[in-house]
Length: 573
Image (tube, rainbow, N blue to C red; front, top):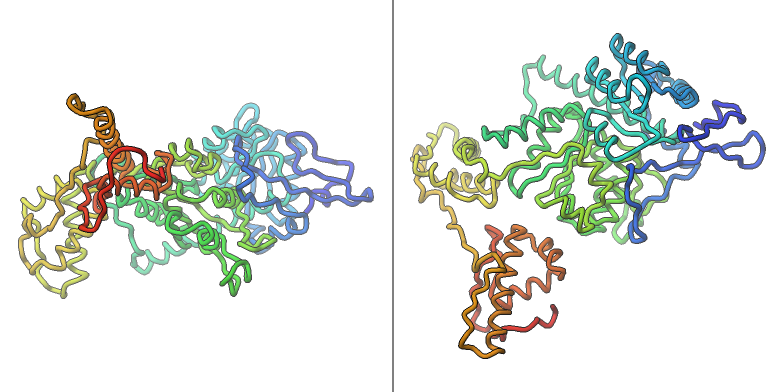
């Protein structure tokens, strides 16, 4: 739908609050609407090497709303409130939405809108952020206070990162910078209404389960440690909203479980939870998996294939190890987050409009990735609406006995015959578990206890030696490169130089790899070398990364391994 169809040619929406740019294309009565991308405020522009999706063309724009169909009868039951003190924008939005079939109320004063929201519930509220008397955030809070299922979209002609993040954190569904097109408004409202449909579907599903006294698959989060309880409480608070969540924590600490917990307690729980590991796939395959592809897009693409974004429609997409995602895919993902438009690999047209909640996670430092240029700033702030940190298991030792007992009973039931007497952990075994460093966190504890459940005799008391814990490996050298020992008084210049260089390289490599927890890609970035060079340097000095702890340890030399002279730079350094 074009704004020109609803307004006379003389009425053009100008200024910072204009709804669309209307351009003459020949005769006085022929107009078209230009699509204007709405990027995250203050976002850096993409570089020439990044694949930024082109804006949709006029013909494609007209078909975007059709990709997210909503029945006419349902539209008449959707109550929308449009609040803006700029008359032209307010009435234009109301006209577009009424022609779509929605039940629309328009309001030009913040105080009038506040009184209306206190008396009456709306399904969807479109509100300007900056107004006299009552600002948009106050109206946002009032709307959600009256009906927590209300979807609020915040508009503003003065966008900024701070205001957008604050609006999203307070519960806004989306943040809409002005100016925007009629089609962009239609698509955004369509995605919001689809969220309402999914929420009602979820509520009906839960009501049906309660009526049949059945239970859905529950997500169990065990732990009484204050740090872990804070993470759970924050996850519980953010779950009913559509806000994006960014989860940080070490590998194995339970980031994906927290993400599943959020989805399970959200209004989207009746729809899929789809997870993708951004570090596990090369760039080309990751792009195809996420966005899908068209037949013939590349060798082996024998049919059209929808991607994970389309599979997660209505639900949630979990982006694990986000900072490992290549930047060209980050740029393409940002477009989907902003307006829900998906273009498959090899396609020249928009293939789908999706309504997805995004939950991202990483075991690294996103701020460091941001400074290093590995993570787009606009994408980071768009996803980091609500940050949650999951503590490492060694930071919550009081939870270890609880987790161990839970895993033991779970795996005993899974692997043993029904009725077999349960074993139990002795006090000594619990003490041993509690002091173990658990570099692999809860995942490592889970594996240890599952092994015990498989090999332990029924009814036995489990002792420390039954746990088969691997002794903690110590670093091969001091992890501080500043601690070089000066014992060179009786050596020649060249011998002393070679000894110092060798000792420095060993200590630097040990400090570097230990610092990043064994993440060789991150270590290589910090050192400014490629991973092959880093591995070769470690091999030169007889070092290797421990597969169990990630620490640097001594490598046992093989018999046929050549002795490499010490000192000097390696050939590929």
